Image (cartoon, rainbow, N blue to C red; front, side, top):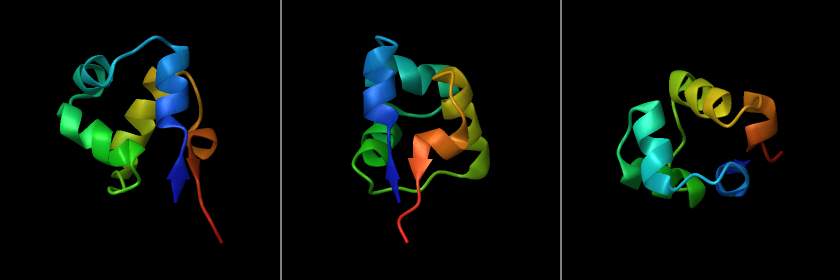
Length: 64
């Protein structure tokens, strides 16, 4: 699974730290998500999408 977190975070001028604060996780979680080393819970995916003003389906890309 790939994601567009880094791209959309930059578009909204958010640091990893600020995004982490807004969604209630540690900065390391955002780093691991952006690197594709961690798959979020549905709740976290929803919170990130909401914060970045997008839909979960547009934020996370599932590879076949």
